[in-house]
Amino acid sequence: PLYIMGMLKSQAFRATTDISADMRTYIWMRLESLNVAQLAAYYYPRMMALHNCPDECGVPDEHGRCVLPDMLNLTSESMAQDGIYLLEDGDTMLVWVGRAVDSGLLQGLFGAPSFEKLNPTQAEEIVGTRGDAVSNKIANILRQGRTE
Image 1 (tube, one colour):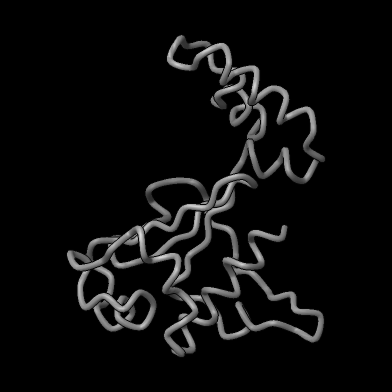
Image 2 (cartoon, rainbow, N blue to C red; image 1 turned 180 degrees about the horizontal axis):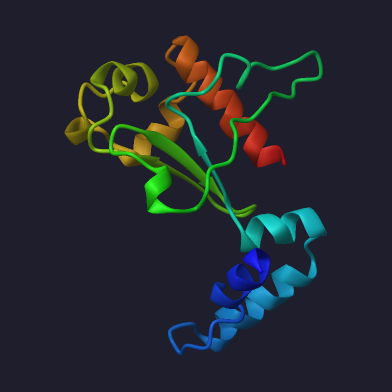
């Protein structure tokens, strides 16, 4: 039922006119080329908390792979204003930063002293380059998410 609901809400099958015929055809063609794991991620995206990762997450092993944080339910109750979350559907990755995130964490990850000073267009380039252990860990998680 979970994947069926995700499928019915997707742009490919949603019964609305807000999606052009060209876009819908593109999505259908793309879906035909995905394997089962990629389809599952598309219909039920993964959401992970990045602000409170366990120590073993984001640390590469001898093969360069790292453990990802546990998946959270895709509900607003799973999120908090003082958190940073990764939402990934196999095609797009979004990092959601809550307004009340600790300023030290923002400084270490993005080089921004506060939420208001955070530059979203430069954030991706900065993660993992600051020499901070948490920043490197989150960069490894993002890298691992891209490869899966």
